[in-house]
Length: 154
Image (cartoon, rainbow, N blue to C red; front, side, top):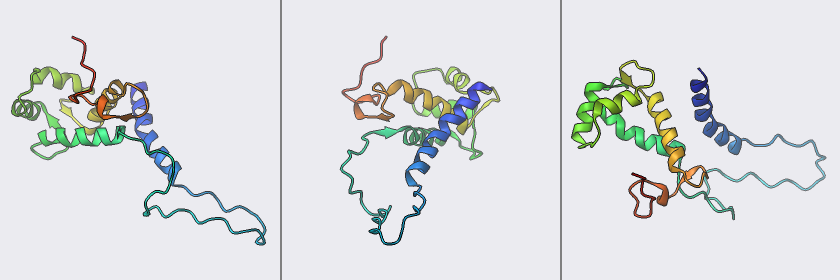
């Protein structure tokens, strides 16, 4: 129960942050004789900010990319991946691990299928492990397989 609450909170935080950045302040109650306030920037216009843009892959982007790749295993298109679909997908990818073991590890609700919530939870944990500097974005150096990425301990 607590795990699901934490997962829901983790999934809601990026949306809340995005909403907080896009909301406009309420108009102030000042006399009309004062100078007009500058117009809010057009969200379609390129950013004129002097602040450096966050460089790297966000959690939402990381999850979306990984989920898109893994949902190719869903050959029947029902939104869930069965053990048979997972095994065929892993065989096609020449995976080094046992597909049944990895499936059991990912199937946290033990319903015999992998769904979006389970994949999101798995990738949120993986993102947290990869984000070495804990800045909320994965730089190239933090991505597995990049030439400057830290090698995993054996």
